[in-house]
Length: 102
Image 1 (cartoon, helix red, strand yellow):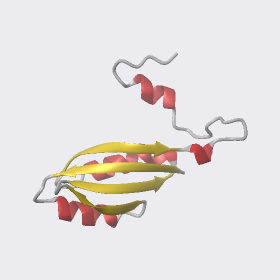
Image 2 (spheres, helix red, strand yellow):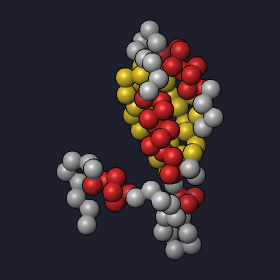
Image 3 (cartoon, rainbow, N blue to C red):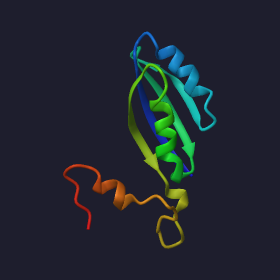
Image 4 (cartoon, rainbow, N blue to C red):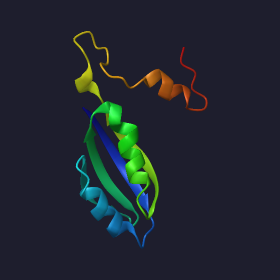
């Protein structure tokens, strides 16, 4: 299980509708609107579904972008501290400019 803190940046005239739509998604809990343009969200989902869930939010009318404020997948670690998931952190990090992971 991954826990993700998000700010969903929405058009000011659409922010209330965006909050309502996000709050109706199974994996999401909303915590109000910040500065009339950001929906504060916590998402709990299987780590392999992170990208899919974020894409679902991005597709909503009125959403400009998402900002990840927190991410943990610690509960998927085995006794040795290795992450047990199909999510390839190395692959994700290599997509980021300026980050080189060997």
